[in-house]
Image (cartoon, rainbow, N blue to C red; front, side, top):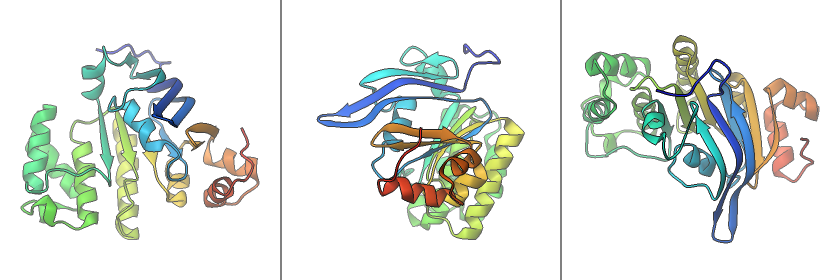
Length: 251
């Protein structure tokens, strides 16, 4: 189905740019995500993170550059790519008038899940939302909605999971439980994860490597430890604040 070899990265981006009128949201961005790793995308608000993810999902057409996902390129490989990836964001909603069960059942059908009841049951138990199955999504708390979105994103057992601030609305206890679920998914299924978050402790705990971007451009890339050592800082939060306030960005 795809063009993967053992050496093929899950995602390969070359010279990616996106212009909206006079605004250059993403500027000549290049990076690779290895298969099976958790890769963090960091930057201040407006840095170009969401636009980058949107181009990786073919929701936004690049102005320039190349995107390769699972060894395939858009538009020719679009159907094959999208059948093997999924996406969750605190800022994207499911149909609010449908119940949790109805939403998950509809998406399971769309994804062609072979045993939807068993799959849904496993995911709602993992995310502790079984008690909300008969509630309309519009009646849920923000934290409950977030967990429903994450369950939806795992229905098709994606090879790549794109997560845009997945724990932003969760309390510390549920955020920690959610991180453990994501780590389990990565280990058990070999999934590749691209994640954005403003929780720097979370990124340190989860990510194998991190890419910092600013004004759509690549600032630095490396493991959390490499980035901390490069800046001589104790935490990623200190690095983030340093860069966001105009401090020197080290390549």
